[in-house]
Picture (cartoon, rainbow, N blue to C red):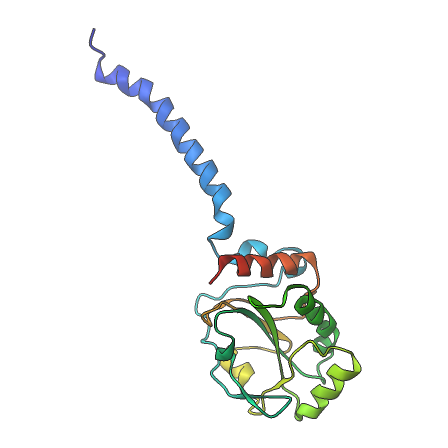
Length: 195
């Protein structure tokens, strides 16, 4: 006995619906690791934002504590959190211990916290890092004071997360609790992406 096309279509519709439903459910479950990290902009990281037109990573030559030239490109292959700060910036000073904790917890071959001071003198930053026992953070100085303009920062502190190719993943244009589980989850997700 031959089935009419109408009857066959009516039988197939629920099957197609179930398949479509399962596709949507399983696709939603898989989204977390492949999309942007905006889903991690919650809790202590609620200020984390991504920019569609993010500026290029600055190619400025900074100076480290020994007087050597440092480029952000020197960190290629690693996810880096670049924090622009200064000792005269109260919120910057308050978040430095949390950045130090983040470096202690997750810093290594795949991730680094890179702190760039905008103090008038590198000695001001050196004294502060030593006095606060934050010597696991790098002492890097922007003597040109042009970083904020290059990264479109509207103030300090400004923290920008870059992938291993130097592309901006996202930013936190405010002080943040970098030693929170929310921050650790965000950084771990960036590292897992393996970019």
